[in-house]
Length: 194
Length: 221
Image 1: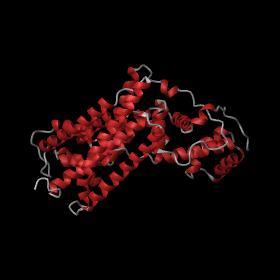
Image 2 (image 1 turned 60 degrees about the horizontal axis):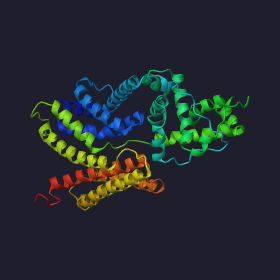
Image 3 (image 1 turned 90 degrees about the vertical axis):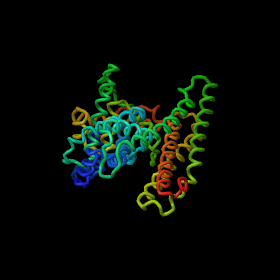
């Protein structure tokens, strides 16, 4: 697998157009999904996907095969996207606002509110409505499968903050996926069992 | 155990990463706390749905733009082992970019910014339907030609990939159209539908091109 990646990278570096197209076809879908959910914008994701692959082509000389090409591209995409989001946040003068968003309203419910089979469209839409800080943590942890340590390293936050942001995202999604729950409010309460 | 402690451990419980004593404590809390039980069920459902989201096919225009940008970087006439060089590629990408950008332009013209008045909303809805009809017409003109992909001119893996991609796109198109019957003016679903239709056109066009190169369509014979 790694040998295949090294061979593909070598062919791309040597100007083999078909090899680079194969690289794009193999990884563009996963990276576009990641970028769409991280930015909450398909248009931004398109621009970033283009930038990532153009940048990757220019940086292929630095690919040494320590990880797979897919992992290398994935890291490139995450870092490029975070740079974009930081730049956007700076432009909008609200760089830390999203990470400090108050917790979502906890719906008072003794029964599950999220449908057993969540529609992909509903979930994709709900993710775009999350505040940026908890959206990033949720996408990297719950969608992409990174653990909290990896999420913390990627976002430059603590593991505790990562856990907190993912929990906030899930609670907001719980409301967003069940419109009826939006009108219910319930503070956390304590139930002693031991 | 508090509700907070319990909910903090739901991931570990689902993944079997708690010790037997910890797992028992969490389950005991869930047994007596309906609110946490409901939240835990929702968290599990959200996580399962999130892990199933998977890849999203980017619009064909992205590859066209990447090819143009990367091709512009490449030394003129530089060829790889395959014998393909960037000059051929740039020409092909430019062609795709032109076609797809034209469709995108038509779509942009037909789908203005969110409407403010009732009259404008009706106009936007009609224009969306026109755009959808234009895409559907393009698909219907390509499908009969691409159907020749069932002929043994394409390698089995390519056939499987084409059919899998078409099935996935058709599923998304069907789901979006179903959703639009309930919420006809939903902008996001409209965008999703047009994007899926655009991807299907690109896939069908790629298939037709492959068949054309193999001489199966008879276009160049």
